Length: 608
Picture 1 (cartoon, rainbow, N blue to C red):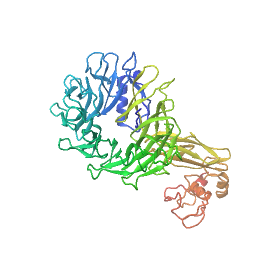
Picture 2 (picture 1 turned 30 degrees about the vertical axis):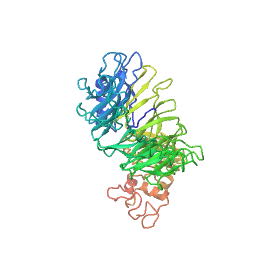
Picture 3 (picture 1 turned 90 degrees about the horizontal axis):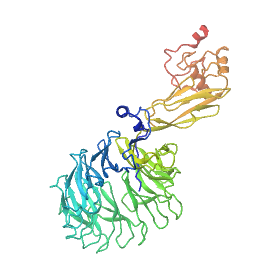
């Protein structure tokens, strides 16, 4: 499955055309001014294999460094690192000297060091230097551990499944030293092997599935000691398998799907004890399977897809009780099913894809709040700093803030064909991914982005705002609009986003959230551009048009412009009287301020 990512929004620069010192300066600028730097475009970090594809993959962040594997065409597939610059993207070590490659896998950060399998499938660690990249332990001397499992960090200890040539594939742990790398327990005594899998950390306890030769494949837990490694419960009693899968931590409880022989494959939870390991709900009553999948924790609730026999696969949620386990929404009404997949939590909203990836949706956990974001052909996605990044349509890089207008292509990297961005990984605001621009082959790319907000213009009849469509503005920056009334109309008001009007230009305050700029216009003639109808001025000021926003004829604290606007809106002052520029109105109404400092309109009249 293609992995994608979410990050702070913006753009970067094409690295091969720019000197290193400029890239370093740009990186410093982004670090110092993350919300005011000019947005840039995705850029090629390095053409690692100029003759072919280097296929960077399996990326992981360790501090500010991005580690990945790549093949430069000379050394085979080896471990690499990058700081986002061409000069800072280097092979860490030629572990298997020559063109063969050590093929590192399962790259995992533990305590600021990188752990991985390499070179005959043994456990290695790296501090990012060649000298500091060493084998932790030769678990199976001269043979490798065979099919190594994923590496799971639990309280600073690394857990994994391995084969040492004397026992079968069993549970091991490591503190990063040879002496501290040991088998936890020979669960299936002898050479058979318990084949631990689905290793999951739940509040400092390791949960996994294993086979002990007496029971089937069941749920186990471990505290890292032999005596503390025990089967939680024989869910499908006897030698049959419960096939516990999709192990997921929600508020210290383990949720998973399992089969007990009496119900179908249903949703279960466990507190680590046999009595506390129970079926949550028989969603598809009887022996049929509801097949809960894509389990994910969002805001302390479990979300997943399931089929209850009446509806096909739809979005469900659970609070751990039968009554609290419900379908969120029947998205594809009827028996068809929407098949919500690739569920991901982005700042407390659940994003997912339905109808075989042709629509992007989001949900707040309610039926009303479960809506389509955009009708686009998409792939899986990931969250980075509140924005969702993914590939879409012709497999280019896209992003979404959860709105239709805020869901768009970041860049058409491949002018012809598809760049197919894969392995999207966030490293402190810098998005790394692999892509093929049609010129360099599949290489390492990066994208630094500043989060953006949507400023939406809204106008009534009688005029226009330019730009006329929604604008994506860098978080913390300001937007400006040109306000143009139609012939025989004038500007009545422009409000929103904390802005101010200067002549025909409306400038917002610093944009910290999505907002709307609203302009309204009134029919009439405004020959002096003071936003007061000439006819009204002439009526109230002896045939002259000298009143404006700076004058206060009756010195009551309301400018003559404000009196006109209040009069136009049919407002009364706090005393209930209509607004009149020749009669003092009660203080405290719309637009009132202390009259001190006003230039009385009578002085203007005398001056003119």
